[in-house]
Image 1 (spheres, rainbow, N blue to C red):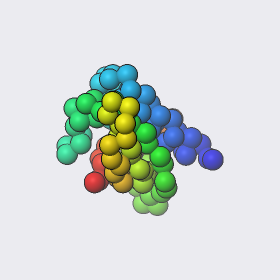
Image 2: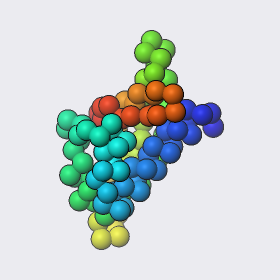
Image 3: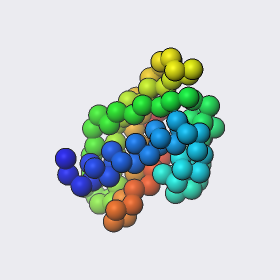
Image 4: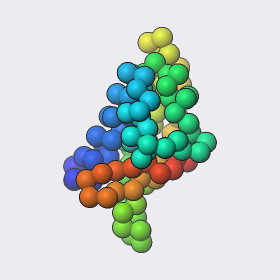
Amino acid sequence: MNNAQKLVSSLFQTRDRAVKKTDKNLFLSTQGGVEIEKSGSRGYMETDELKTTVLATHKDRVQKNLIVVFVEEEYFYGGVFSHSQYLLYKILQNDELLTVVDIVW
């Protein structure tokens, strides 16, 4: 696993941990402190648990600081699996800091 993949993995672990703790500020910190259109924190904060699996990463060849990540998110309510979604995340990398800038459903 290269450094970018480790950073991506850590970013999604932080998001999962924020959901489990219902910590909106921690969750938003992975997004530069702002809400993302069409994917607000409210829905995530209503989930009891989120388990994210990174399925693939792609470092853009033109925009060198853009990483596109394909994930599966599993949602749990009351400790019971509810459903899963496959999403594409657009993430900007500035040195060791990754910031989610868009999510495509």
